Image (cartoon, rainbow, N blue to C red; front, side, top):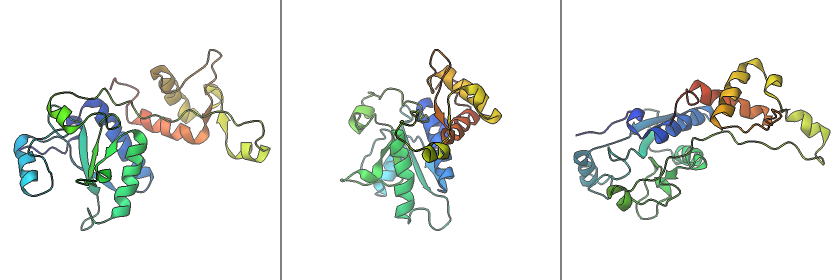
Length: 215
């Protein structure tokens, strides 16, 4: 019986975004714990028999698919009783492009997150071996420069870096990697236009090693 908790067992694109989701949840003060990634048919049947799944055969959790993971609150005695926790963690996942089982009407599954390409791929399709395309690596939104009508006070509160050389030393190398990977666009004259808060996200992605390997 296989019920893996190893994120590396997920498909590489889903694994990369799962790790980013973990870091974003941590930054939001949410103590998430991944409790399951891929499973075999024996474990899926076990879940069906104990009422935690409506299917006897794995789909998104399948070993060959690796498109879903389950999670809980990493607080002993309160792993599954905090609705607000699941809603907040799910909101982050949905912003990234994941589908949340808690939104399902027929069989809500709050601890479940999966990549279905916006709901285009169903469980039946996955079981038939029809898998969604690679999930885009979640990246910091590229920000536009402030409009002319905005006040100088607003501009002072939101610093925008137009050139990599003008950024803090701790962020420059990470931004260069992000540009090379296409995560951040750079014009012919070297302009990038990044809000200061987004630098932290880019550095986080770099420290996770997501700019150093293909996913």
